[in-house]
Length: 461
Image 1 (cartoon, rainbow, N blue to C red):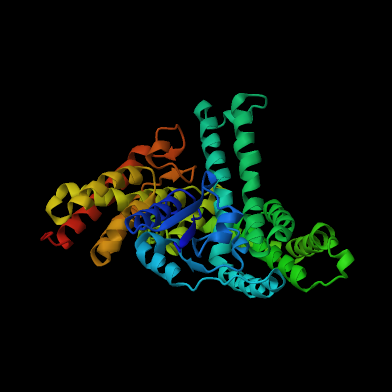
Image 2 (cartoon, rainbow, N blue to C red; image 1 turned 120 degrees about the vertical axis):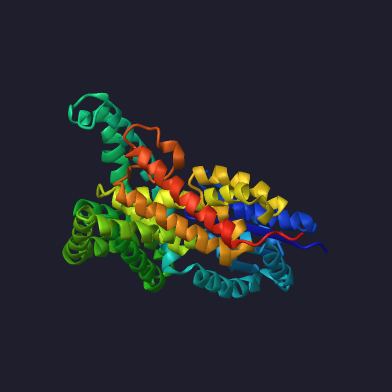
């Protein structure tokens, strides 16, 4: 009997890794005549969603994700859970692992619960991890930050202070971008961190905790703390509050929302909010008062982090740090991060032009796609090259990205939108010092490409 494999791919931004992983798995499956269906959870939402019948009939399920993908629906099935990068780099290995799983034996309905409960516990363990919870919050926050930042930038077309005149279009744009979209940023971040930890019971206390963090000036750091606090408080209540069966229905709609929101709110107001606000204020003051030397060093560090693992934990840590600061009107780190993130794929495209004999025909074709991904701020476009030659590619692009990050900070470039690549540069006031910003990207790209051409060996076949 033919074994049917299902897969789910999801990355925090939902732009690159999600679809690259899906395509990598699908391509490997086609080459091996394996029946595979991949559900993607990207920026456009859930696409190609797995049905319950397909899940029931599947031999095994591959979950390659950095955010929550509702894995409880796979309880009782064979599940291979891996970081999303594994699906891009080693799709055949994942398919082999899935195929090697022993088939789930059919069991009587009366015995199914005994089989499913251990699987549920296993899936919950696999879903845990601070990084995954944080990225779940970031992925839901990003659309608000992108939309809000660009709308604020558009309001500046009419003049930097035009929004101060009430009743005007610039004032309306500022209210939409800052008063609404940015105001929701921290609550959404906290709410979906808590949701990742505790499911629906965590959403209400997470949103409230995030709103309190936003109101008391604790910013995105307070939102992160509130999200984890609310999530674990709600999870503890869900797991340990026991009621008679007739009253169990009150837990999710009355008892947990009320108690978890009350506990989270009181802790944020009386215990956590003030010290986190002090930390956030100190961080903001330090960043806004950086000397040129310190700014260059920070840009160097952020730039290198963006390129070392190309969408992995270091990349996302730098990106999350920069995005969070937008709500505190600190825009320089965001500029350095996006500029540096564009360098790896652009550098590889340029290297294929400068030294074509050091790349295979397939790599030269991939270089053209990498150029498009690079100008769109999709760092993951460099992953195929790094996977085949990491010892030469990764140091080269890391140096180039670090140079770009440092130059962006040195030139005092700023960025009000956390995504969009080169396409946000023409928007008036979206980028501070746009010509110098482009120059920093060009210089870092050239540095990385030259390093690559020097380090890579000529292709012999």
